[in-house]
Length: 201
Image (cartoon, rainbow, N blue to C red; front, side):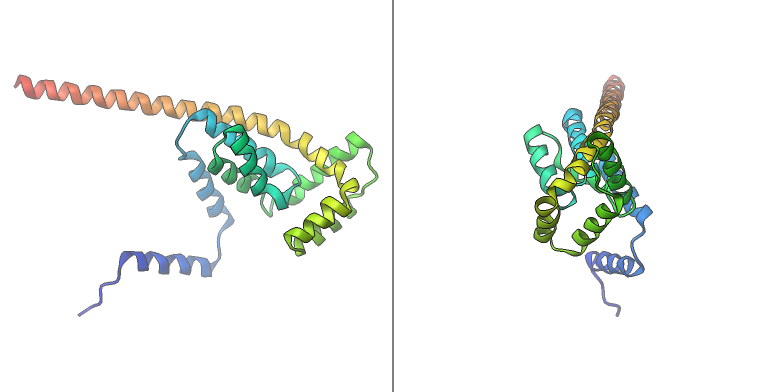
């Protein structure tokens, strides 16, 4: 007689097998995107969360991304899940070098800083191998004067993306909400019509 295996155990086994084979970046991005699209709630709250996540995710403040998103979502009444998911989408190992480079480039243009890209890469390399507290001490205390231009450049670089993401998300979530309302009204109308026909017969 065969042993019956609970469904939860089967799912866990499949999950571990997938991890062993390696996580596909494309599948991870698609999964996070679907999470974002399927979020429910007030479109304005969701859009604020997305704007905050986009802004913080693109700024060169990697050790503090999660903390800053939690703080600004609480202060600005944005959806925290939307903010965290968007931050993961815009700030990942593939995009981080580019966003730091653009932050440095914009910052040097605005401030005329003499900080070279090689110095920024060196600091980022040290911070990547250090603990969070050591990274904070290294970049934002010891090298703060050098990194001011990069931080300023990151803020200026991120702002247009945050504004664009807010209005884009607001439009999409409002459109989805209207579509759901129309479908609900249509279904209720069909149900009432069918009930009238049954009572008439």
